[in-house]
Image (cartoon, rainbow, N blue to C red; front, side):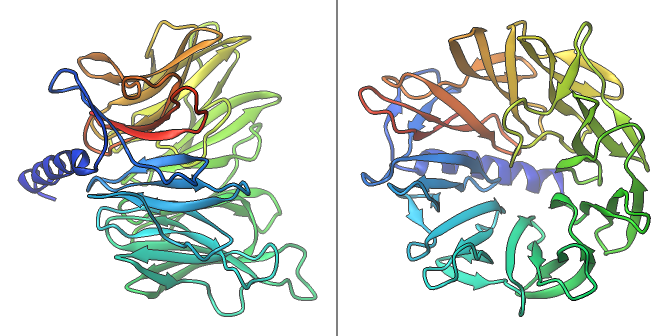
Length: 393
């Protein structure tokens, strides 16, 4: 993508965010915040994210405790599967294609199927004969990664799964058919796919396919690390994963055909991408910068890692990275005291507040715009306790 086109797309996306109706809080021109509308019947919102085109999406809570996918762009929230028992989004791209899974109202208990939503239309991606499936990734190339489960045959010792890339509403290539592995596969922005599955010796192995579908890695987990859980994948095919040495966490990076332990901050005991919640977060950008948390007892410090160098992001005794974008901006939760945690945005020019609109109390930043210093998060307003969505730029 040319520099001029990329710059134009970023500018358009940032301009689009304030178009969502909400309450604007006074502040400097470069630091403004908007509340996003929420249906009265919703109990709150979780897992908010934002695409490069400014589409905000997440999960509305219902009274029965089930999540339901909704999007915000140029208007109020729109629930994408109102008739489903439950729905979940794993990703969305700049064209507004949202992917995930639903539990249809007429399905057997526990059944989930892969779907995509685009322009008010629902696209069924569940393979014929599967007993469960999910669309677990999408990129701006229009590719969708579908993970499917099938009933084991008489000789199968593990649940057989299929990993396939869909494009244009059809299967473009099947990458894997075999026993289930650890976690879910990842689809990168350039079309790489990564997964941890058993190899022929029964050990866990990292498999990586390039954008054309060629297998470029089938590497056993490094000894003596625990089986890794995949977290994030960038456009260069570099994979961030959570692992452990004994009972202590370690974050591994696969790049250039080899595993690298990104290490610890001085005096720390373990490193985790996020101590309590690492699902659907951005931990690596295309420059190879990784964010993680290094822990010692009650102290957890967020840091940035690149090319073997770890740099603390804040002096606070407890801080947790939520995301990093292509500019190198990092969204954090920082806790100066055990009972006081606030959202913060670390840019190249220094830290900035990422708190909710005026009048809200506790706030949590969820995610970052891929190319701009724009965050989405949730905040509460007394006397209500439900989490309300907001955007700050």
